[in-house]
Image (cartoon, rainbow, N blue to C red; front, top):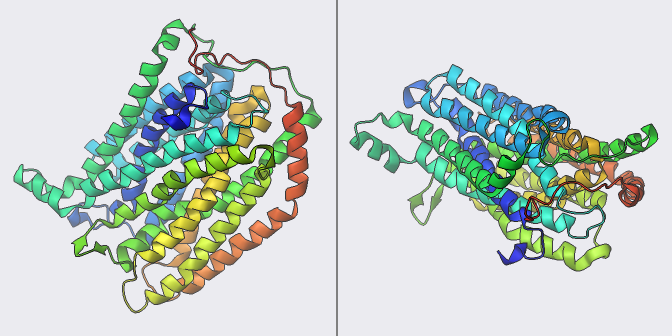
Length: 463
């Protein structure tokens, strides 16, 4: 916990809450597409590959699109704290439906619950992190980098546990010995994801219980109160946020393919064997998170060490896009090699390494910047817009995955090359206006209405 010593005490609580919420999200994501395409007689739903990846893209989009509504609800009525709590309860219910139900209707209903709950929780827990820091606090990006590491600890553990329960022959044999249908192993994976969200709720409520008892109904717990901004000021602020969102759309169209096209590439065209030991293909889903776990403290320390000399947020995000384009470029020779035989897992390790570097330059920086630039009265809505951009990127990830036509390895290299070119062009275009965004963002950060917000509870003070 030494890494938290230079940050407000509330960061630790939010770190572990988000860790377990992301465990639930990535545990589900790691096995969802594989479950959808699995034949019915083997316990799956028998979807066509293109239909499965498009459904995943629609789900990923819905998760983040609903963040706007979640941010508005928190800004207008509940406050971010209560929104996080209610969202966690809804997510847990969604996982329970998928664990206990064995039909397409149960799965789709459960996905709807998870999407709705995440729409409440995801933007507002980031708002709470942002409220821990003043607008000019040099620790902001570093704090969000640590918070982001919590996300990826959960994302690392989830595929290992949920993937093992869903795909492991050893676990299926254990179910058979108990007289249970081994084909239900996938639902045990969904259930484990739900347990993760339940643990996150326990952490959040245990840490926040005094605040829950003290809160007056209808007032919210941490709602900021700010004087209204002028229209010109609002336009400038949301113009900068629009730039951040454009970067997010492009980056997440690559990152979200980890659970779609790259997941199927790992399952069908990559060796899943290490020193003679065969492992579930879904375990590759832990690799991106492992990279971020390693990189997050390094980037956090780097930003603190550089202080005012660190690159501006817009520049960091464009660097992240170039890393994403490079990751897709690595898939070109990997897909070409897969035409003759299953390829080495080192290809995917290289791809996920580049994505991890890009993620550290873009995602936590975006979270930090949006909470810094957004008007205080609309910070929940602004965070919702940031996650909508991620959702649109998820939708694109599903469409790009369908475009790849993963049922046949021929043509994959050319398809990855076209995707890499698209992301590169987008990165170059955004780099062209980076300086304008940087200067505008700096002016807004120094003049941002930063009224006192009741964050004493998150900071660890007595209410």
